[in-house]
Length: 384
Picture 1 (cartoon, rainbow, N blue to C red):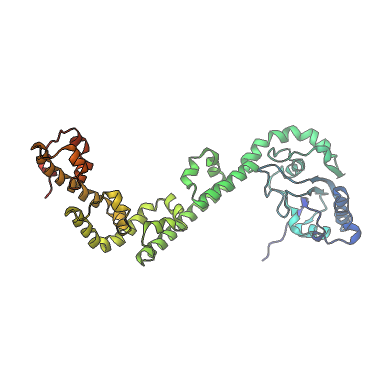
Picture 2: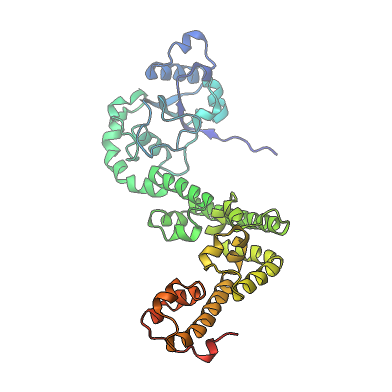
């Protein structure tokens, strides 16, 4: 059974002056551009359909230019950065209609008609919104600019309630005014891009209060969970590409579209391990050849020089520790040989510096050699 639309006793109309948005004859379209004349046409149309207007107020907003001023509040179908008007209407108790009927009577799209928010201050909030008095982050309009077409003069309302409205500014901001909504949209974007995680939002003074907001907190938690699920999917895709040999180097992993997001959520080490596991066995023969070459003095390069060679890049990436250990062992063997030459005065420090034979010993034991204070290496460090 379809739900019946509720009758409205109050509403706010927010629209621009674009003739395409009005189902009016030419003589009525002529009023567009003048907010008071436009409101008079709307009032006459409502009354011609039997609705009795108890109160009616209109103001033209010339276009929000202040930073952080945009919101969906009362602007569902209108760009509030452009010229538009706001009309607040209150009908007599016995005179009411549905939102769709009101839109049809006026001859405008239903989207420009706003229902009152829930709560006993809904009409009061509409009245205050005409001048933005509760919204200090928005352009403030003079109450004298509000035109009263029916009922109590708007200036009487303003003079009576303006202090209370101004005191409500912190409450409006806390419940979702401009600054709060803007921070929410920022937080949402940072979650989505991976710039911040949900846990980091909680530790950020600018955004932490959003997480306890019933509306924004729920949305941010949902977005965080979604991003985590997306990360799992991206990780699985890259891992499959590694297994299928479509991704073969860490540079390719880092260049992948979603790597920064994965890194933010702690997948970097898992990706390294996946790549390492996949290629370790395939590189074992190459590794053994390299280690043998170092040991047998066939490869006379330091680690940085080895890493700069294209043929050894992958080996240095995954087996850095093994290679550095082999280089250290070679240096220790050279040092042990050099030790006897030094104590028997068969070689000078200058000759050691210039020697290709002892280059690794000089690199690793430079201080001892330069000081000519060369202790023997412990037996546990000697290598065959």
